[in-house]
Image 1 (cartoon, rainbow, N blue to C red):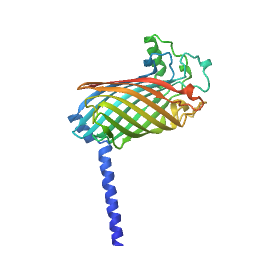
Image 2 (image 1 turned 90 degrees about the vertical axis):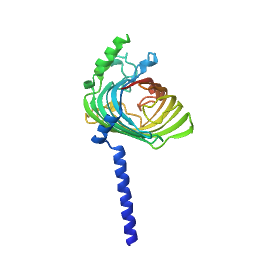
Image 3 (image 1 turned 90 degrees about the horizontal axis):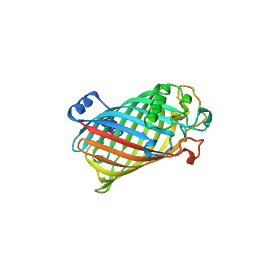
Image 4 (image 1 turned 60 degrees about the vertical axis):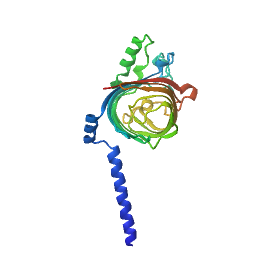
Amino acid sequence: MQKNSLSKLLAASFAFVSISSFAQSVLPSWQEYQDVRAKGISVWQLDIENDSLLFNDKDGFYTSGVRLGQRNVFNTQSTSTIYGWRIGQELYTASDTKLLPSQLSPRDHPYAGWLFGGIYKESADANGRSFRLGLDIGCLGPCAGGDWAQTHLHRLLHQPLPQGWSTQLGNEWGAVFSGEWSPLRWTPASYMDVTPVIKGRFGNIFTDAAAGVTVRAGVLNALPEQRANYAFARVEAKAVAYNATIQGGYFANEHTLVDPKRGVGELELGYVWRGEQFGVNVSIVRRSNEIRQLTNGEGAQNFAKILFSYAL
């Protein structure tokens, strides 16, 4: 009986120590943030995603994403701790922005804008193990300014003006918690590595879970913001529980005539260069159909991504 009690006590102690260690390494704290800000470097990032970057006349579905952020990065020889913030806007439209409201199919993607600001913490080890926790708060609907942003961008680029923003989804404030975990990194060669990842989002705008793997080849960095020069390929499979850009706001009681596909796949091919101060990531993304009422041929989409970074 005493041995059994001792075993339970040891198990409970081990669990407490493990949970405490996890909390200290993953959960954010004000003191840790102050230390990272004082000891680390500051990196500004501009992230642009747009189907127009592919220089074709296809403009629809997830058509634009722009994010500006700043991150404080503190790297030791074997670990990295990052605290950051970002603001962003994502735009979603029907399959063809030239269609008038009267021409839109009830099966098409609704017009929607998502404007948000967020904070996050990342921690990473040189062996590839990493965590990320984040929170974004913003608004979906006309409050996101999607009509103004896309119309002025198309005027600047001398592209046809979008016609369907009068049909966009209604306003809803939103919050989205996100998490990401990579357990390790496999290194089959000095110039190549493979990193699996599990991630998820929970909120009234997006709720989903995904698993994927990234393969890198070239001059690799073990920790974020170190010098690097490599090509990469990323594949991901996502299970979707809720997508307000398709279904309407969760609390708005707004019913659209389309539903999200519960399984979505994504392939990304790209290149990363990171110098002492400047860095750039460029890639092309192929995303499978996200709407259940559309065929895979109708709903699949392509867009390009460019991320610029500058370290102070």
